[in-house]
Image (tube, rainbow, N blue to C red; front, side, top):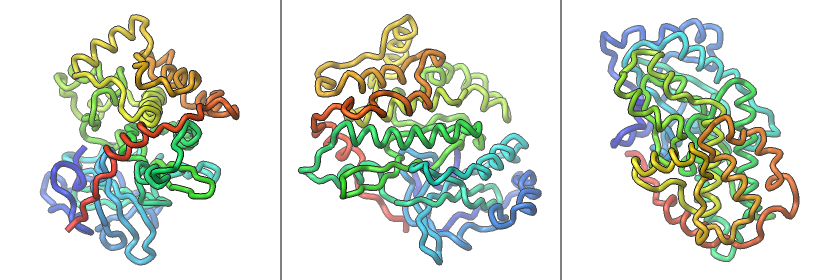
Amino acid sequence: MGGCCGGEKEPKAGNTTQKLTPQHNGCFAELVAESKRNPRVVKEGNLKEAYIITSGPIDGLVNTCHGEHSQTKQKVVITQIEYTQKMTKAQAAALVAMLKHKPGESILARVSVDAVYYEACTLSLVSEIRTASMAAEAIAGLGEDGVYDEDIVAAVIFDVASAMNDLHKRKLVQGNLQFEGLLADFQPKPKKVQAQIPTFNLFALSTETTWRGKHKGIVPPEVLLNDAQANRAKLPGDRALQWVQLNEQTDAWNLGVLLHMMLVGYPPLQETEEGVKTQIEKMKEGDDFPIAEHYWSDISADARDLVVGLLRVDPSKRFTVESVLDDPWITTPGRTGTTDLRESKRKLIEANTQPVQKSS
């Protein structure tokens, strides 16, 4: 997906406008009626009238930057998508569905789209957040002597699974969750990390089919194996989105990748793309997800079982996000391992806490 937060160039603070060209005239005609029905949320105009982009883009998220309200200083994330053709009725309907999603206070990782701006060819989504800290920064807050164990990981996974499940009940999906893009709070007393999902369902709004991920192991198998075929087909319009097949079970795979990352400090399936596809084919024939014992020796059997269950190639056999909320590793006291996962913590912090470059 395009956007002023995507690609190599970083966005300038508050600079979100795009020059209107004839082919983009009327790009957001499908939103005009919604802006009249809901003028406080859906607005035609420039985002910088109310919000400032403070830094970005956020690694691991699609075209998303940190920002804040220009008057209240409320922290937000701003996602921007550029359209090369008119927004379709299906995309407009997906956006309206996102706007209707208001998770309850009980969902710690709650997130909702609170404002939408459209101008020229740029759609901007604004979501209020509790924190601008990334998950690795929150983990670093534990300090050198702070214990990073399965209890902390389980709490984060429960937060994320709760938010995902809340989305699924409303026929929405997270879409492309990665550890790099996860926001979190560090709570000093008692020491714990509370996670927050900053964006969701963005692929339903996309005009492209690119899966944004640092590594092919992040991409669900059902998407990866269809990738080459879909790119060759070059299907137009909404049909181009169908091959991506994002649904509740692709979210479950992403949750498994997140759990894998947090337990051992590295993503699954680190081979080349061809190597990953070979490994997936073996798993399709019945092999479980490969566990490298020298990295997993300190991880409890229950945690391993949950990883293997979430990283099953066959979506019909993959654990569901809802089932994670009832998994013994999450719900039963004493089932999580007590070993201090210092090496995993070190890997996560070193790989994901590079200084954020401020926008000029």
